[in-house]
Length: 272
Image (cartoon, rainbow, N blue to C red; front, side, top):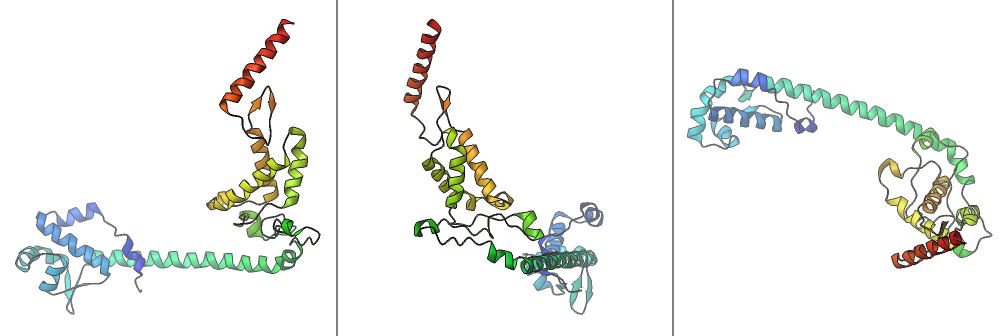
């Protein structure tokens, strides 16, 4: 079995087995053995049976290496000019098999996803054409607000993948004009101005393309926009018990004046 490059990323280390096998080594002999094992794992192949090359790989002088290697050599077997380590060969084989299985499993998953995507694409071709907004009665400036509902809007028929994952708000895409008009008419009685709705629509279109991961995926963007507006309204400050939707927040000084005026009026009513 051919060994994969990814098998080098993690080197298993069984402390109990290693200490049991190397308990008779000195500190320097242990260091030499560890360095040779690391080289074995990084290259994923046997070491050369040559003292000069081994000393270079172990980053030691030749004389010092020869002295230390006498007791370390018992952990290697020589064959055709190469040194083999039994435990390293076993671990490399296991790692290679795991990598191969993981790659095969990933390929099966991706093949399944691609098949579902192709099926969904074939079914949704006609819907993509019919759901594109092509209102020719709007002005040139309003046409910039036209939204391709096959990307972020509501679709009558969706593939299984799209219905579960949702879609992202395209970068540079503006909120459709009719969405802004709808929320304005819905919340006008509460004090929401059309300018306030438009400002929130601009923030909405700038914010959502920057949201990473699954948090930026939505199944129904029009509904998401309505929730955005309701949240905006709920966060507005109150003045004298009345919410001022879509209007600039007053300064702290003005808030203090309004609050004092409110209590003065309240005391006057109680005195009467």
